[in-house]
Amino acid sequence: EVQLVGSGGGLIQPGGSLRLSCAASGFNVSSNYMSWVRQAPGKGLEWVSMIYSGGSTYYADSVKGRFTISRDNSQNTLYLQMNSLRVEDTAVYYCARGYCSGGRCYPYYFDYWGQGTLVTVSS
Amino acid sequence: EIVLTQSPATLSLSPGERATLSCRASQSVTTYLAWYQQKPGQAPRLLIYDASNRATGIPARFSGSGSGTDFTLTISSLEPADFAVYYCQQGSNWPPLTFGGGTKVEIK
Image (cartoon, rainbow over all chains, first blue to last red; front, side):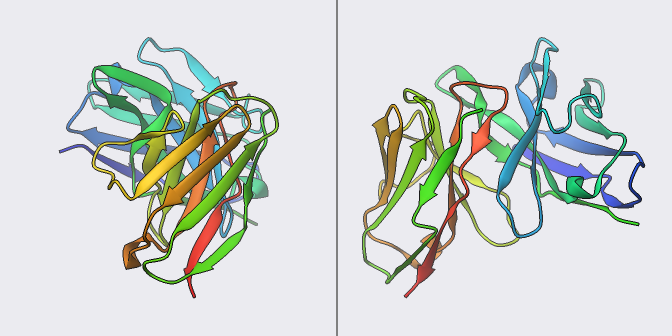
């Protein structure tokens, strides 16, 4: 069974750092497209970052230079290192897998999602 | 950045009725469009990809149509479990991937 379990959220002051983790089971993060998507309280969805199976990474302009996506293949875990956090980064952060069907995988659609981990940036 | 505009913001319907949700893109996304359903406290669920293909395990009452800039999600006969917020998302021109603002389907 495919499962994604996010962790690492919490309350952090502006300017601080936090690392989110997303432990995967039932598939290998190393061979899939993996993304982080966030949702501010009461708001819509915002894509944050993606890592390809080959290691290429992509970011939203709002987090570029501050956030880093990575993975540990041995731990089958996806990470999001968040530095220089701002109040506007407050959100539930979801990890998500690129959708695969019929032998084809799509980096830009998401089928399995983690349960979300809340990051609150406040003084 | 491609902006997706969803309408209406809220749709008030009764179980058994047909729901029609709209998503308009600021420029063509050809058919690189998905629809998601999100219930309170839950992660989104992929319903439709490539504008009209149902994702694995999605019931046939959900259908998607459109291409270019105008897209529609139709729920043929609403069931109680279908009352939720629905988002469209484009995968044509990225980064960034972008989502619409959502349509809430509520019980009338």
